[in-house]
Length: 199
Image (tube, rainbow, N blue to C red):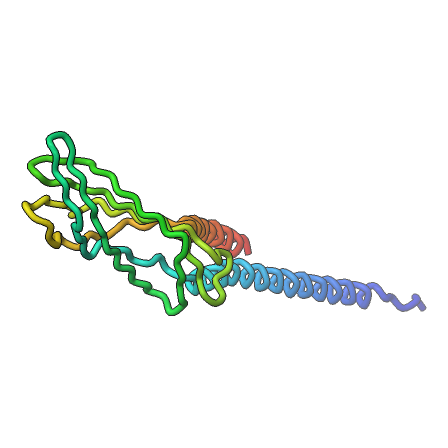
């Protein structure tokens, strides 16, 4: 009588072990895909959320001007011009200004009128949590509609409100981070597409 054969049982056990190993590999791979997707998607959105909570650039305008002194000689004209800047803070956070410097340059003068370029440099301190920029150096340049006409007597000057172009450290940071954010989204989308296609 021939001895019993265990070949069939061994084959079944080998297939079962191979199926379990394959199932474990699939579970590990799916977990890896899930974790990678969560990390890739969550990191830029968290960074974007942090940026969106930061302060926006304030709006500067030249609202009015007062000519207090006007002396005319045969060769020179001396004038004292008081310019009023209006600042609008679009944030709920407070902003304090210190070390303010005002500059003016004449870019064109003719017919008793001077076109001015007003520049205002101010250090700004943001209130509450404003990482990574707690302080900023604002540079506001106003060069449109700032036209001063010299009348025959000292009076209040009238001209249209001039909106100023404002540049600051935080504006550069936000612009740079925004470009990095969208580049990251593009690269992550391509990576996820290739990853899912390869499944």
